[in-house]
Length: 415
Ligand SMILES: NC(=O)C1=CN([C@@H]2O[C@H](COP(=O)(O)OP(=O)(O)OC[C@H]3O[C@@H](n4cnc5c(N)ncnc54)[C@H](OP(=O)(O)O)[C@@H]3O)[C@@H](O)[C@H]2O)C=CC1
Ligand SMILES: CC(=O)[C@@H](O)[C@H](O)COP(=O)(O)O
Ligand SMILES: [Mn+2]
Image (cartoon, rainbow, N blue to C red; front, side, top):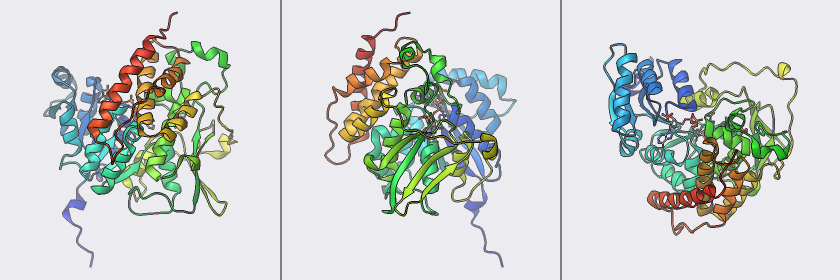
């Protein structure tokens, strides 16, 4: 006789997507739509793109949307009138507290943390504190609050699954387990984690021309289609620096056992080197629906919409050491990790401010690492007696942003 399946396991798992209008958010909706029997969208959050939010909420039948303020709420309602197709309008929740409460909502089983930047930290942390399955794309949350985040996930029994492609690849190359990361670190037999990096759009561009690159050139990633902030991070390779810090916290591995290897094809998503001389790698097409499907379905594998990697067509896989003169941001991230939490907060805050200024045409590309270096020289201590609170970390983040704004303003980009 078949065992009776408990009722809770028969209904689709309800997914809340923090940052639903972005690149990761939209890919998550794509994967969910392929499995209506297993997943449904419960709540979607957005910041500025109310048109995309309305279309996505209508298509996914989300019950709740979360927007930053009353103006956004009115814009959402207006958009709904034209795309809602007569369906009842979702419940609209407003403000940062509503976003964190929704991440912890009893109606939610799974939370995709895909807001860009440190702005994503409170929601991701709330999901962890509520013991949810947390699909973590928002790497900045770990850069700013790695210790607090991992301790919270452990204490409240959150199922933490890395979505960033490199960390997802590493997770897949670790010994098979049926439970998600609990922050207890990798087995002692792991010698090294190797993060692959494409080198971005400027891997081979003449260094003396980098000061004049435009935002659109920097955002033209050779392999991945992503939001503009992370695309610029890939171009400076600060993205890889943030990922080294992310790997340190997720897998409990010290910086001297994490290395970065340039791999222009982005087919090998990362590797794990073992004591016996084995190196395990995860390969696939550069499409985030694969790690997203892995996180949603874990421990099962589910269809993602991504085709298989055709190695014969690809022909070759290249690897080389990163050039730290071309990519000073990578060195700065290793320095920050060695210096501690305050420096990691400063690194991230300065980068967010500088990238934003660059995208607005106010700062040169080559001044992004310059601003970060100046801010890192001013780091103040975060209270590290015990695990710092979210408020202490956010206050340090605000102080470092203010400094970065001053330093960036002193380096105006003139035509
Ligand atoms: N894209 C990718 O392939 C990958 C992304 N990641 C990480 O995932 C995260 C998301 O990246 P990506 O999807 O590319 O970014 P996008 O810029 O495409 O999307 C960002 C999302 O965050 C929302 N958002 C922006 N600012 C705020 C804010 N202050 N408060 C609340 N919500 C906000 C945006 O809302 P709105 O659009 O409405 O303004 C949008 O939904 C980043 O941390 C990135 O590093 C990691 C690996 C790969
Ligand atoms: C898809 C993803 O995970 C990105 O972080 C990606 O790795 C960016 O490519 P780079 O290797 O160029 O930073
Ligand atoms: Mn990545």
